[in-house]
Image 1: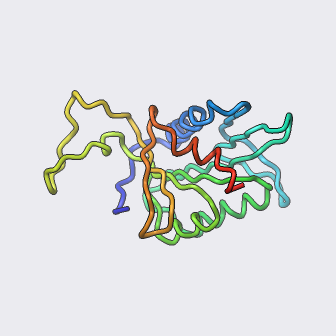
Image 2 (image 1 turned 90 degrees about the vertical axis):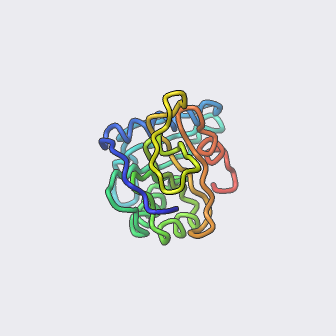
Length: 184
């Protein structure tokens, strides 16, 4: 993915947008809970998470999904994904998902892919409108409905990654990832 211009969003608005997408993505699951600023105990103490999603299975067994929301001006580095992986191991959580307002460096995408940590870059919704005019910055026409924010769900290693769009009406990439049994 090319260099990302960070979206203009407050950290609280960013976390609330992510929480909204997650809640919509888990609608088909029987017991799915999404909590903002939740604490989860680990071997070295408690971790305060931006968002914690819980899927209840087998009448009481919980699957934990750690969600980090990084509202930064620079792309996420490998070290930040390594910290998420460390939290996963410390808490015994099952999955990790990192949202960023500024994209991810190649090493971060590679590490996330290796450790089955999903990555999503959040952008202004109008950035999803493209024209054929090379090099022009044409705003979307009023007849074109755009979401306030979109996310680019990334899968695969740097250089061969695939991107799927997420918005308030299209949450399938997250829903599919949540239901993927191979990653657990």
